[in-house]
Length: 385
Image (cartoon, rainbow, N blue to C red; front, side, top):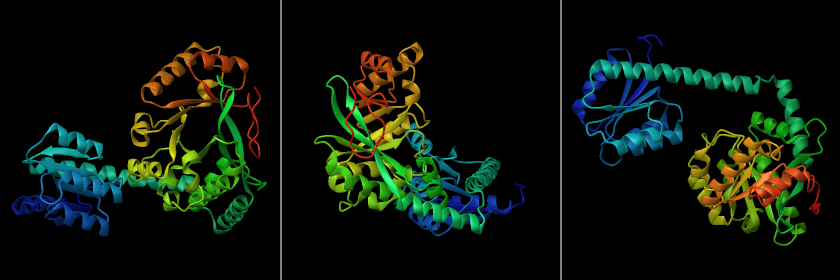
């Protein structure tokens, strides 16, 4: 971004003299500056329009700069926020980083330092927007009208022909069924795989329809499940933004005390607003939470802290060949020990051979799922022991 390019900046400071001084510095460089005298006023500005950079004081009446930053992140995940304070502290710096502050500057901030920081933030914001647009372009493929219509037809058919397969999760030590995982299927010949259906739903902006259909189908089949068997239902991260999920009157909510909602570690929770709050609402209804595909994704520790799951499902990539691979054995053993310490039950997915089963049992994994016991089928099939 050239130095004479105009971009929009929001300047927030409760000191009028400081506000005027910084505004003067920035306008000399061609920046379009909007000012606010406190966090609440600034929050209204953010809700009303978009900015390329935000510069805010930390210590302000009514709403601190940290609290304001939290509000910003609800409305805009990308805009760089530069925080300034005359009383820097480790605690406020840590919280600033936690909520994605771009820089944390100690007052008084020299004019040149302020401008250079703002300019760098604006350039990076421009790059972030281009990357997001490129990603959206790549994922959407800029479908022509005919392509979009065809995808709509196939997707609607896939939803109409949607059905659920169920695969047992067993306690090997007790030789009993612990629960069943519900798995998405469809009779639409051009869109049979779950990945194809989810991809179409994402491209069409109709992911919530998939989640609602899945939950309704599971609720409708639940009466056929063996007594005491838990029902494991997969959630797309987008489902956490669907208010229907939290309705006490929704079909699955009425069975919440026997339902475990699985959130995959393969997908990022970054775009979901207030994940801990979402989880608290679900648990208040009676649902339990599982983190799925553990070991295959990139969410790591943040998934545990945000989801506080009762279950951890080890990804099948760790289970395949575990009987002959000391490295896999070490990872599974360590993950099992960590989950035990965190009070989570471990489920090992993808057990296909008796040797894998026996090694998992030796490593302390009692809850198992895989083709060795049963393939996903219509209805609730009994496992093979």
